[in-house]
Image 1 (cartoon, rainbow over the protein chains, first blue to last red):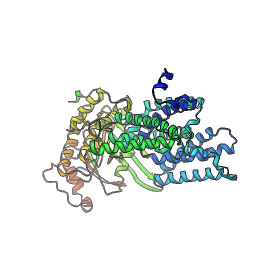
Image 2: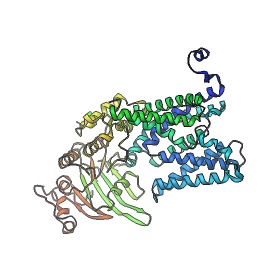
Image 3: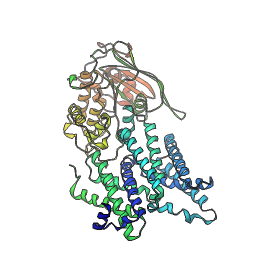
Image 4: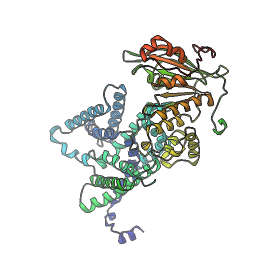
Length: 280
Length: 269
């Protein structure tokens, strides 16, 4: 079946095992990011997710100091810590959210670079900056699948609450939602997803991959159902197109996917300017 | 009318149920925002809160819904004197924080509050029927499929009011719900809120700057500035020299003086 398809379609790239793995990875990561993106954009957390991505450098550095062969555990732990830290400081209400996130993100980046560049060895970590989806291993695919299943569960139970929270926190409170717990849970889920997927997506582009599909979907959706569906669809389309193009162009996959997502954004933007929302 | 609402609880017009706010105190840092506020609000009563900016009016409402930590006690006693630990509270915020680019529709807003099915899997037919019925209460059923970001200020507040009425609350809180209304919209909105009180016998607390309109519609006026400075019927409050000095003369023409017959001065029970 697959052999037959390979002969008919221009899918020579599927002959390589690493490309098949990358394809599966794209089919897991892209819907994941398309889903999360809707709430990241609605709750104005684009900058927050960017900061989480940057903080991963410090997580890697911690892993190196602790002598871990795979720094993933340290990355996850530090990312969660960052998320909790930002939310707590934000709650104290002393500075604007942007300032607080900026302070945390730059501190984490600087700390990470300082530790990792000791003795001039930063180059070997630069793959985290642009990500390398082609290097993904089968057991890592299982990890991604697990995260994906986890997010679906979270989305089943808490999506509506997050939507109310994005409209007005007092309204959410009056509806019996524990707004602090909700805010913290989503921040932690985001931290988890970002820290796990960052080695394949890349620190520099992770927030673009979160924001662009949702922003494109906003241009044309008439309600939340369409918004969410289109965001996931755009993310998958950008992912598949980007993966294939990067194979033929020999470019970094993550960035190529982001470019495709950006192209979709501009197309939907034009469509809205000249046509209005699709669903109404 | 009440029978149309499935699962809603509507109590009898008794005037006996009572929301008691006892010793509400809110502190931010070492600054006292609210100091020992005591209010008794009976069902079927519209209480308007007035006061300068920064007087703690919104803070009081947010303390009542539990968003802002506070000292003191909120209790809701039903007609038989039983303390309902969790009265149903409807809340209409001063303004929404959603960004106008969000594709959320009016129906989505209702669905996010009332249906179990996650919104990303779509809205249930039942939700749409219910939302349309709620919107009819505020003459806004035609807005059901509009994006929230495309509504005018007045339309949005009517939608928020319809949402706050589902389920029918024991206590309805409105935080300056009419900022940005034109005069006609303002009069209609007050008429609507005023009618709700009689129709569903709910207690309403309304934060407002529209003195002439609340003089006409409110049963009681509370002048709040960190503490309660004055409270009573519109006649009592707006005739007090102290209030006149602060807010100027408010016309009470054609408004019946209800200070005496109701005999609910002080709100005690």
